[in-house]
Length: 447
Image (cartoon, rainbow, N blue to C red; front, top):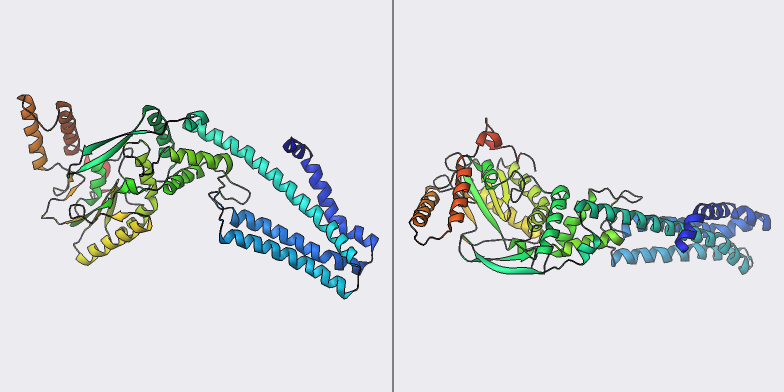
């Protein structure tokens, strides 16, 4: 009700109050003498200027980009400034009054005449701005939901439960997989499509992306002398809710929701939506391995990390790629000091992002040309991506046991799938993905 009244009479009220604030000195001049008017109105007008400054300060500093206001030092500074301006302006008026022996009630009347209309004008403008922002926010939320192809009810009523089971790792041990229920999986697939189109991901990331694979991840390292293989310890389990929330906020920036000062403001319904989407993509134990949204979120979280590591490696004439939590760096010459600096640099940058380098012997390898330079199962010693003879021989033995009806470590379907994968790697068209003159992937020439 009040919203409608303000909307209808907004321009009229602003005009009346603005005119009153401009004419108040002349009204007082008509009532009293000129020196009295100057004395009485100087303090309140300083107060009005201070209020304008505070409003600007509040918009540009206190209300932060992601809508999370700083409840500490920034809020304290805002309050101190407000009180200081109030005390300073009115004290000035009182000093002028005492020096000139003016009646005290004149000061109170002139201050009230000058300040109250200004405060009323400020409140009306901010109320109208808030309601306009709220209306635009609702439209924005509706637009985002339409793009994701979800409704508010589907998001709020979604069952956020998972089925947990273990699978064996190739390197030994087990990996915990948390598979979402069917309803949640369908919602996450739609969120995955939204993030694929809007989340920021560095070109050095090759895991779980269109037209990328373990083969394209290995290509930039072909022909280099030394290959450094690193691993992020418990990567998916170490991702925090705040990191997931930041991914969704950055994705929403592409929707160009700008406030008056050209900064993204995510509050109200939009802030609630980002939190709900983040909750559907995260668990207290990290992002679930098995959820459709987890790979794109993980890639986006490491965007700045990828950029910094690529810059360091590129400045030393090396190549850098990352496949999920597997980091690969290679250099054309074998410089032990550079290798040590690189490992230390990666460890420090991971720590900056809240992650740890896995220092187990099996997870931290420096491979020279006389060793099998295998990257995520792809061998690159022969100047092209291949599958090692040992792996191919093992697959032939498994197929032989299956054909003879003997027990094998893989099912027939798994063996067929693995053979198709091996054929894909062995017959990969190197010319379609590389520059023939250098045999280096064009995919990662820029971060």
